[in-house]
Image (cartoon, rainbow, N blue to C red; front, side, top):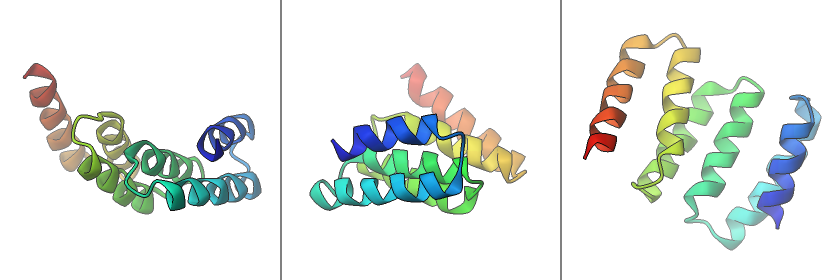
Length: 104
């Protein structure tokens, strides 16, 4: 429930930092209940990108991808963060990794 409410308000808020701060508090509750849930970590990372915190978002996407190797959204988020950080070579390498995984 915390996760779903957080997603709803985060997407509706127009990237207002004060709202994102509150939605992330909801996600903290969700993570206390299920700390190994990759989707919850991915959502925290996504909300970090909404306020321009790409370095922390990348680390959270990385953690989510380590929690569930079959969940591809964190990989896309990692690529997005690298592009926003202008780390294009790293983004290309990660994109190639995603292409290889999807081909198998």
